[in-house]
Length: 245
Image (tube, rainbow, N blue to C red; front, side):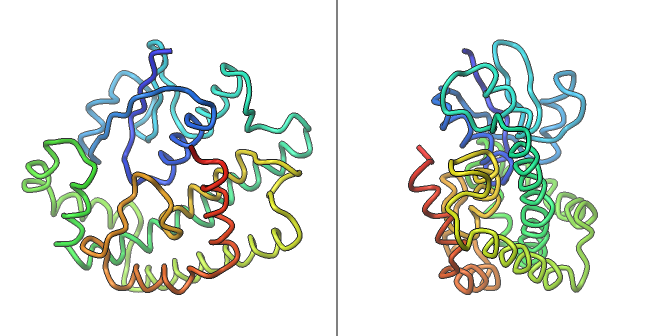
């Protein structure tokens, strides 16, 4: 297959797509895009401008969930979707949970602190980006920051509210995982993958998400350290070690 993944390198959802491609042993290339300019690249290819987008032999599949659906149908072996209907419903619950209770508040927490540190944010924004990223942000950086504030409705107390939502989500996960190794059934599924990808920035496990001190505000680093020894974070690290190629 001629396979190309359009992505934002540090996106939880793009990490979910990369992991699913690797787990299914599908060779692929990536094309790193920049927020704002990505709309020009995707225009005429897909219905909206959200990433990731997977191009396979000229066909475009948008969204990490749809990419997993496609891969499980097109590629035999290493299925991520349970056949059992009841387990399928549980899997959908945890995929939604990963998005609404983890990925969204994590994005708000991250941007709320990064926007208070524009120098670090600019350094972080150009890492793993296309070659023209520094020139693009030199012109549009303030506009991009304002767009992010509006997109995530970031206000004075946004970071603390997001922090509490993250901790509540982690607590629910730990309660569910007390006597089990997987979220659904007794094998690795897209539910586990979705949760682990969403928490990859906290666990420091994403191959494409830099976590070095030079681009990480103290508040984010301290929160990561505070959670580092939680069983659910150790579980995420175990999933990466065991199932991430």
